[in-house]
Amino acid sequence: MNTVSLLEIRDCLDGSVPATIATCSEDGTPNVAQLSQGFYVDAKHVALSFQFFNRTRKNILENPRAVIKVSHPSTGAHFVLTLLFVRTESEGPLFEAMRAQLAGIAAHSGMAGVFELKGSDIYRVLHVRKLPGRTMQVPVLQRLSSLRELLAHVCQVTDLASVVDRTVEGLAAYLGFKHVAFFLRDTSGDILTLLASHGYEASGIGAEIRFGQGVIGCAAKHGVPIRINHVTREQAYVHAVKASLSQQAEPTLIPFPGLEQPGSQMAVPVMADDGCTGVLFVEDQAAESFDYQHEEALRSLAEALVWGLKAGMAITPTGPKRAIDPPAVTCAAIRIYLSDHSVFIDDEYLIKGVAGAIFLKLVRSYLESGRCQTTNRALRLDPAIGLPDWSANLETRLLLLQRRLQEKCGFIRLGRPARGRIQLLVERQITLTCVAET
Image (cartoon, rainbow, N blue to C red; front, side):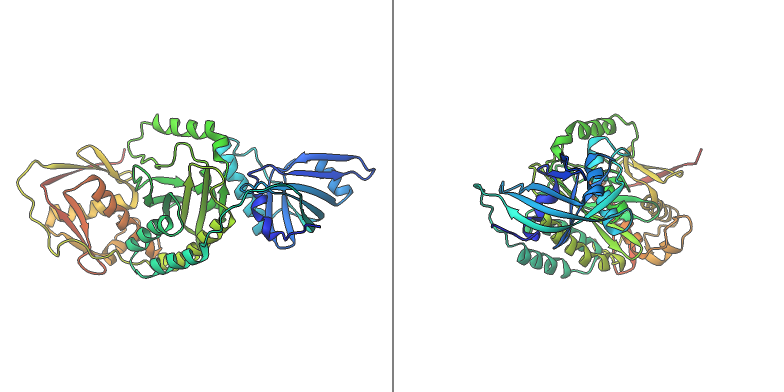
């Protein structure tokens, strides 16, 4: 008999190829149905989603044995699992992980709030058998050594900007991800801000995603990885979201440069003691691009990243040590709306929020007193900035401001002449107009 271990067929439980479950009532009446969701628990247990009071659920409560047939998404191999129902969990880490995965799928199908997980049904796996038949061969990738090289590459630097850049570039170079984005949390609210990306036509730096929004937001909200390998099935929803965003007149909206037609997406949260600190996100145009080993690699990287991000590392000193005297050229008009600190330079949106408040303080100081330098401590103690009580949040906002200036404004730069010091470098005459709250 061709028996295999549950770990060997873990990829079969992702739902990329719909599984089938067979149950039997107490009087012997059989029932066959498709599974909504499967989840690997450990080497001897799986969990199946309990969403509806259907015949399968009724049969399991009467007769706790079930058989499911699953297929490997890459090789085409088929397997039969004999299961014994153990219990239903309606809270705890496993339930939250399954609920988050379901929420991510619902976000792409326009069914948010409809796909409600009632419970996680835990089954003991009594037997796994491979069915006879021809299968495809899949090349074995040396992901462990690649992950080790990536971690070494990231750990060689100690400043926030370099950590972010090396993480994004390394995920492409070492693990082969074609489209990568690195979000960090703005602790003034449940908002994720894009700090670096790879593989997109536009960088999207400054794009915001709320907790619970899409795959990325759901991973952050629930604190668990979400991996979907069949996003193309829900393209009507994806295009509807993009169309609604493009029709918005909100000038401060920076769109996330995601793929128009993704086939696979995976979001892994960077978790600290006080919750989600950031999210690593990868996607690909092809379906079935990510397996659980990819997920484990990103989880390992996320665990390594959290300590550096929480330390509030400084941006690498850049730029000249002194300000450049602005030449006599056409003035650049800076307009800042005090209600949300939205910044516009020559009518082009730059940034808002805490980063906008920091920019306002730096520009005011420059125009009123000629001062072009300040310190991290001065920014943290300034109540007008409204910085949340988290050390790394200041560095995140400084890095975001620095990169938005580099991308949108070539004549104003943010330099770091020394650790703990910030310098505004202005190469044109500027004027400042503050629009009061209405």
